[in-house]
Length: 89
Image (cartoon, rainbow, N blue to C red; front, side, top):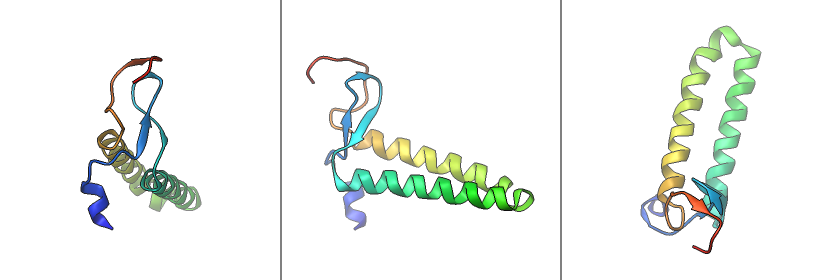
């Protein structure tokens, strides 16, 4: 399962306008996005229940998860990340 991370197959479509990745086009992209959302929601829920204990841990963990999401989605976006003006890619 880990070998899917090291392929160059696209998981995300490029945005039509602007910079970055669009929606996922492969199950790996959807799994990455769902995992990120689940982790952020779970950590936010824990931090809300016990802010004295979880807030100092949740904020760096969410930032680290966001960084991982950005790096992996940038690597697996069809055509890479660049500014697009809406033309055909």
